[in-house]
Structures are given as structure tokens and as C-alpha cells.
Image 1 (cartoon, one colour):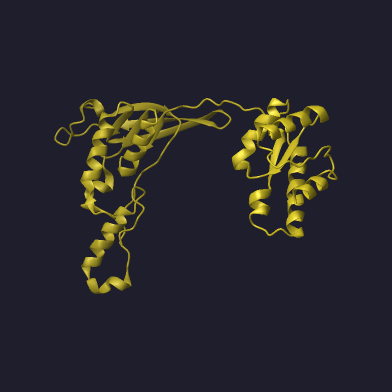
Image 2 (image 1 turned 30 degrees about the vertical axis):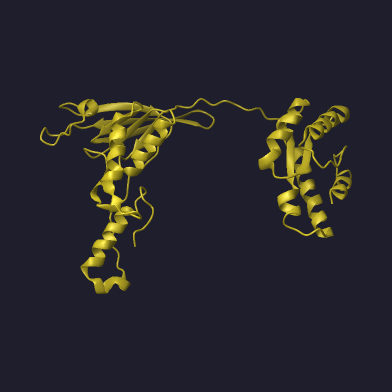
Length: 292
């Protein structure tokens, strides 16, 4: 099949060189590709082989070393799309030729591209201090980026703090939640703003693909009797407005309990309503598995 495809490729418009080689991804194969580019003065390359997920970077690097823009190189996936899914019959070869023809026409329409670097704001604003927001803040902070965690309630924890056990292990919810709450408070890259709401949002595109957002967060003061022991994490006697610039904005605003009618459980009376309320409380973005 490979020889027939190479022979057919020579008859395609714009193709000046076609060769069959079993191990084109090896060093001899890449050397052969470089020599052909220089000798034939090629301005585009199509490699008909395996998946581009595996070897497209290899061949694009090779073409770049030979003097061609790497984005002028395309791959036709004959392995997954032909050899592995079809028998060795003439229609399979015809399909392989069509796949090569498609990539040849694509390369003829490609333009040289250059990688660009886009500045980003490596700071995240996480909305919601439930288990989903807590875990998101910890993941981002542990990856090295600063995080501002905003929670409208006086304390983080969300709906999970109201549960007794969690599905499927029936572990105590506080056994899972409390260590994460402590870790959020003590993490050097996480700033916690409880009893705080976002009042305004402004965003602008600083560059292509880069959006900067500025949020105004109003942090309210709690009555002294209700004020938790968060140290300097809460405002003083008056509300304070903070302007925050950030890039990423994970929204983990939680779910709400929902009671639905389940005819199959009518014989349980009020019991099934309590079970359903408990299960739907777990089906928030923090825990997507239903209990029932």
C-alpha cells in the first residue's frame, strides 16, 4: 500500500517529490527528509505515517532545521485511519491516497506562522468558599499562583459543612473538610476574604487571547458577637472595598437543596424527602455523585 500511495502522490498537483521509507521517524528517515527539502527546494512537507499526536512535533522540528517554517509540515494519519481499521484491500489504498491529497491541499494553503508569547496575570480569583472553591484554591496555589478566595458567608465550608456523612465512603464530612479549611487559612499563597461580595467587574483585552479582569470586592464588618476569629482576614468596624486584578476566575458558587417528587418512594412518607434533600445537597458542583 505504501508504494502505491507514494506513486499516486507524484501525480497530485504541486507535488515534486515523493518517497517511501518504512522508518521515517528514525534518524536516517529524518536525514532523508532534510536532504530532500534542500535538494528539491521544497516549501511544504506532507508525512503520511502514524498519528500526528505522536510524531508531528518530530517532523515539524526536522523541517524547521532544514529551513522551512514548521507549520508548513502536515501529517496524514494512515495508521489509525487506514491500516488499523481496514483490511488490506484496494479501497483502503484509495482512502489512504485521498487522505494524502487532503493534506497536500492543506499545506498549499498554509501560511508561515511564528509562536507568540502572551503576557498573563498569574493570579486567580475564586468565587465561593465551599468544598469546590476550597479545592480549586488549593490546587491553584499549590501550582505556584496566588489566589484570592472570596466567600459571602462569615465562614468557608459551604453546604458540605452541613452534612454528616459523604458518599460513597460515608466518611465524616468534617473529617474531609476541616483539614482543607485549615490549609486554606494557613496557605501562604491564598488570601481569604470571608463575608465579602463582588460589587463590580471590569475587563479588557490586554493582548490577543489575554483578558484582564478587575473586581471590586466589598468586605463587610460583622457584628462583634458574630465576628469569627479570622485575625486580619476580615475588615474592621466598617466595610472595605478592594480592587483586585486577576486572570483566572473559577466560580464555585455552590448548589441549593431541591426536593423532587419520587413516586417510587411514596411509601416511605417523609423519610424519602429527607433522603432526597440530603442527596441533592451532595449533588452540587463540589460533589457530582448522587446518593440515591
